Length: 310
Image (cartoon, rainbow, N blue to C red):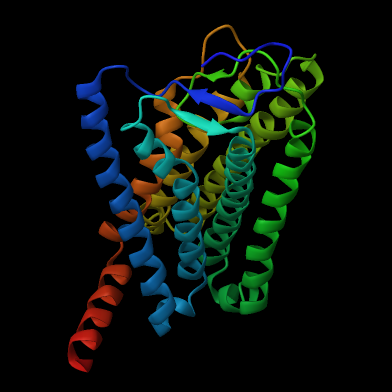
């Protein structure tokens, strides 16, 4: 769809993944199943943590429930639109729909970034200061930490979107991706955007990289501390942290690649966009449930309670 350069555009065209109708149908069913699994897996974690008294009072699982809620919300911002587009010949999204998608994408992404830092602090206290764990990670601290993560996400997205909504879009309107995101949409503005490009790199790219490095440092400090205290505790610490390290790598890897170098000559790899919005939220429930005996035991208890109450 072409727009005249003299008029403001009202919608964008998303190129999607493939131009082949057969592949579009294949991707439709594949991503529909993936989205159903995302919602089911993460919702199961939220329900389990909410209704199991033991997990609900444990800081790590309280934070995990919030992480699953963020994963569900993050995937919902992009995946349903992508699934519908597989069946549409004209893959369009309104200008304000695009702006809303970018707003919530960075709002939830910034919140999850902060929450992962909080979860790293929780693991540090649990492993390195076990006797003071419940006193330090009390209910008030947990609630304030979750509220802080939402506040950071809001500031993160507003610091960029407040400039995006004022940009004029009057020329090309084709977004070479499966959903709207700042780097690609910013390039379509019919005005100089160099300063805003630097803002995106500093706000999203550099922030992602710094948070990732801080998390790796925190995990290294935990492992070194445990090794000094007890050589036998190192394997237990590695077992506990492996799930967190996997989740952190899966989340921050695509973010750093997409936002740290977003305005180079090559287009953003659509696979990374799919990874960020679909694969990571899909894998998180698997990582945290299949390798976690407490979570599996809590799910069994809730299932028995549900059966006995019928």
